[in-house]
Length: 279
Ligand code: AMP
Image (cartoon, rainbow, N blue to C red; front, side, top):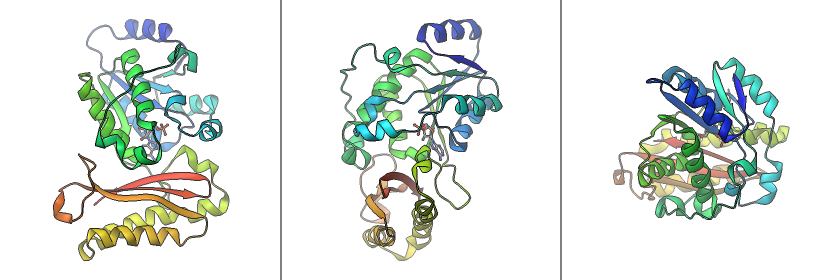
């Protein structure tokens, strides 16, 4: 494993290592790595000659300053985990390296960025697009790996690649879950012991909603999910919607789409958790 902090050093290293027909895989992360991230890294290592993992807590995608401040950071622990993952290049720039000047770019993803996360975290996807487009430009990967855990983000990254004609293959990786079903997340460490125990309600409700799909109209299933989580003390659903997985438009009847995805954001105390399920 190689650790690199500046764009110029990264580009020198890649120019050197990339001679010939070498394929480069890229895994952008914000660190505080867990098995969910490592699955993306493993897949990249399997499918490419060189893999770059970026660790950068991107300030422009945080609409809540406090959330940015309390976001977990531990570069040493992350590097230890990545050492075991094989021969990867870790790119861990500081904020000035990525944003020597404020990024004024405004992306337009229309409906895709207006709903769900976009509705409740204004500016979030613009920030994601700013950092990912910069990182793509720096790393110039053949393939980039993103988790289905952030389903809306994945859809928007595909759109970004299309809008900018980047020709990067976006690879989607399934959600990695804890034993009890909770989707792994860097934010899970912020849960109290009680909240962590109770947080299983989110994934459990999504799984059960899938079993109920044939017996419930879409609207009733949506309410069932929200009510079942909201009765748990300290838990509050911010949104739950069942959407078409390509357009992210809400569906009202199961026949509206062949690709229904249920997306949820819920608070456990002050900790905001997201998850989703393919029906
Ligand atoms: P983050 O560090 O949270 O920005 O996540 C970096 C990448 O890891 C994103 O593509 C996420 O979707 C992905 N990721 C995070 N958690 C999981 C998980 N539990 N399963 C699969 N992918 C994940």
